[in-house]
Length: 191
Length: 107
Image 1 (tube, chains in turn yellow, purple):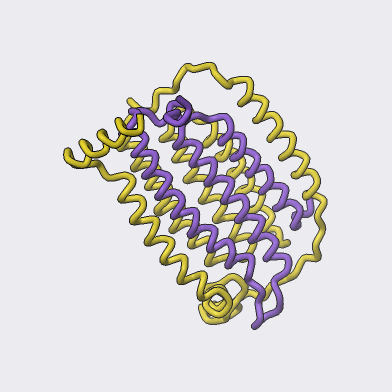
Image 2: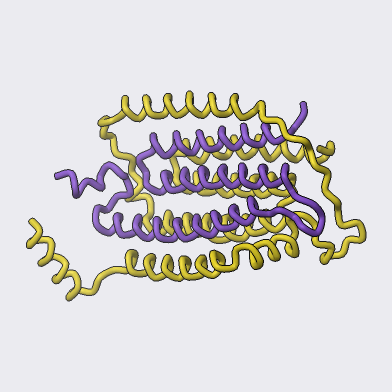
């Protein structure tokens, strides 16, 4: 790997690890969301070191542009009143044990896979700077791979997103007074 | 230091572990959802890294890993939308986003 790529990898990898820790350890959910933003941006940088240019752009658009904004929107919508951490000590030992086991499993996997060796393959760059050179991981190559090799799943993804939109609206919307009455009646019948 | 496939895989497994620990230890559902996003992203990193080390040849690239990562991103976006809708619904019902207060089925 070239020297510049190594530097970008080390920088983005370090930032990704630090911001991941900040995300899961933040007291304030808004700080966690902003750490997640930095995390996905550093992952986009890692994709760039792997010659996945289009995927890096998609990562920025979808995660930094949509998912994190959605998180921040929900945090703002709920407000600080719902975020008060419960002081219920129940399950504290179990949680600690689970975290310890997961840390050991993760460390063993990390040490096991770190020894993986694979011959490094040099990739051609676009020398003339043209967008149509069809380089590895570019718009041309990845678009061709998606539409020639995975056209049906790609169309199914659009259906999935439509279903997700409808489901999100149906679950998150409030209920009118009549609907509330009907729901309460149903709850009583269940009880 | 030689940066190869193993370095990327080790980094991805560390990120996955951080996400899993966050998911197991935090009670705030929003933070649990963010931990899930971290885990999905780390898996994407392994897919892209594996793809980088078996790229095929010019003109006939093998991009299955990146295509799969693309679909994972799409599914993760759908999952985040539905998950956040469920969180809003939970907040309407219980006035909290702590996962241990969502215990309707336990009583």
